[in-house]
Image (cartoon, rainbow, N blue to C red; front, side, top):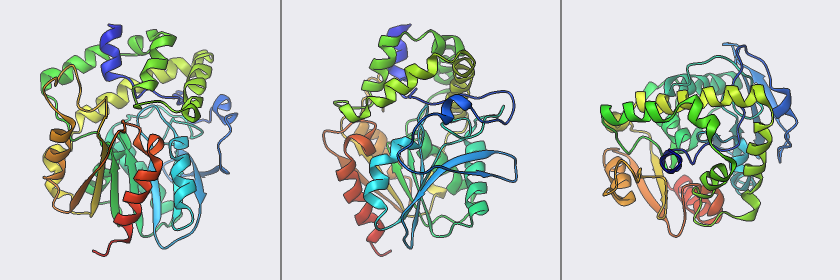
Length: 317
């Protein structure tokens, strides 16, 4: 089982779980974020934590991936805040955001982020999503609840497709029990698989995750939430609807992504095939690559990603 888990589960990064009522986690409030943290309660009652740095004509709204939090964007905010307004948020039940008993579907996340945009009165929004966050961004574009200026999709989930049988297999494998049973050495390995060479300045992610495990209630709820997020991605595939996404989009993958495609279910599929199959279905998308870079490319290869993003945002449509 452990050998299989590392093929599907390396994105279970340091993030807090859910509780049974919309409350804050005092444990996670103790985390120190690199920028001042703000909080907003949405009309739905969901409370979101976020950082808001820089000023510019465009607002870059950053959505982290499965098991992560807004700290995933630290290097990028520092790079972009001189030219753009940079907002990175903790999705519901992640980081310092409020907790609740939610569905954790892609539609739920997309609707919540759209509600956040409306509540803050944001305009000229570019949604920047990583992995699961990129699938949420695509779902937002399909829902059309808010106007999006552009999309930037980093190692997006949703381009690789799975059969109904494979989805059921995921459901059997990714359970609260298997998440909870993951030993410490495998947790470390799961983090490392996000990178070609995990840099020292990313090791705090492991420390935060292991610290969270010491809080029994938090960790138990986290183990309940993660399978729901995985099933949320599988239950609302975006691949067949990609031709409907007309928002100008930049798709970026790392050439050495070890998580996409799934090495166990699709051993003969290449990252090039996955990326091209998705990009080719989007009528207004550009595909770019970062050499010698893994799945967590906005951290491992922040400079290269920054240059690609700047070029895309400054390009006249």
